[in-house]
Image 1 (cartoon, helix red, strand yellow):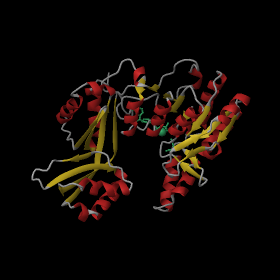
Image 2 (cartoon, helix red, strand yellow; image 1 turned 120 degrees about the horizontal axis):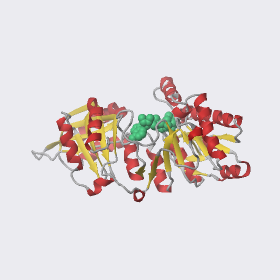
Image 3 (cartoon, protein in one colour; image 1 turned 135 degrees about the horizontal axis):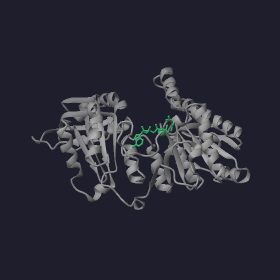
Image 4 (cartoon, helix red, strand yellow; image 1 turned 135 degrees about the vertical axis):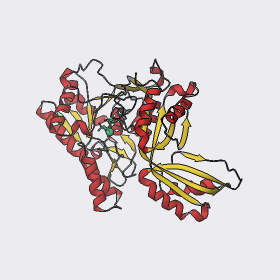
Length: 411
Ligand code: ADP
Ligand code: ASP
Ligand code: MG
C-alpha cells in the first residue's frame, strides 16, 4: 500500500491512512506500507537547498530532501501502534534499498525483502517504509529517486516481497483519460496497459512516476491506482474497489484506439536557423547538449532547399532552456549556423493508444480539429502508439479538451 503526499498531508489524513491499513491487516492480508512526505514538504526542502546555494552538493541535497519521508513513516507507525496494529518504520538505508549513486535521480538496484516478510509472519508487524529514498552502499550515502519517486519505491518493494498487488493510494480514484483537474469530463479507466501507462506518465501525467511503471512491467507487478479519500470502513477488503489496474495488453478485452491524452507545459523550443547541411552537424549540435546532461525530445529537421543550409528545431525541458542556449552559442563556430531562436511558452500535447498500431489516420483527425480551433502546430513526433504535438502553451487546455472529445473520450 503506497500513500502519496496529499494522502498524508496532516495528522487527520495519517489517521485515515492507518484505518486503511488496519482494514487490510484485519482482513488477514500481509501488508507493507510506503509513504511520501506530507504534501508540500518536499517542495519546501528543495526550495531551502536552492536558497542555501543555487549550485549545491547533490549528496547534501539528498540528505535534506529525503527527510520528509522519514517524518511520515515515523508518524504513521505511531498512529498504527495507537490503534492496535503492530508497526515499525524503516528508512531506505535500514532495509536497505540499494541504489546507484546518481544523487537526485538514483535507480534502485536491489531490495532484500526477507526481513520484512519474516517480521510480518512472526509477529504480524507492518513495515512502514519511507518512499523516495535509498542507499548507496559503496559511499554509505542516502540517495533519492527523483520527484514522484515514492511510486517507484512502492513497486520495487512489491516486487522484492512478491506482493500480489501494489496499491497506489492517491487523491484521485484511478488513472483517467486525461488529467481530471483540467478536463472535468475525463473518465476513469478500469484498466490500462503498461505500455500506454508508460507513455502517459513520460508525456506528462504525473499520477505515476515513469520508472515505477517500467519496474512494474519488468517484474510483472499488478499496480492498482485508487483513492485514499474513500472512507476506509466503507471498503470491502475482499471486493473490487473503484480504481485502475495497470496490466498487460492481453488482459484488456475492449481496446480503444485512443486511451488517453497527456500534456506537459514543461517544454521549451529551440530553432537553429541556416545550419550548414552536411554530415556531422547533428552530432555537433546534440553532442554538447548530451554532455551537459540536457535531454532533447522532439527533433525536426528540414530537407535543405538550396543544398547548403537547413533549419533544425527541437525541444528541451523548460528548466534547461537557458543552459541549452548557452551551450549552443558556445559551439556556434563548430556547428556553423546563422541564428538561434527559442520559445519558452510552448506545450506538448500527446495522444496515446495501443490501437494506433492498427488504425491509420488517427493523427490526421487531430490536425484538422486543432486547425478548426485556430491552434497552430509547431512540431510533430510520432511513434507506434502515440503522437505528440508542440503548440503555444496558452492553447494547452483547449487542445486537450478538443482532442478528448474528438476521440470519443468524453462519453
Ligand atoms: P501523490 O501525491 O498521491 O503521489 P500526485 O499528485 O503525484 O499524487 O498524482 C496525482 C495527480 O495526478 C492527480 O491529482 C491528477 O491531477 C494528476 N493527473 C495527471 N494526469 C492524470 C491522469 N491521466 N489520471 C489521473 N490523475 C492524473
Ligand atoms: N515526496 C517526493 C516528491 O514530492 C516523492 C513522492 O511524493 O513520490 O517528489
Ligand atoms: Mg506522486
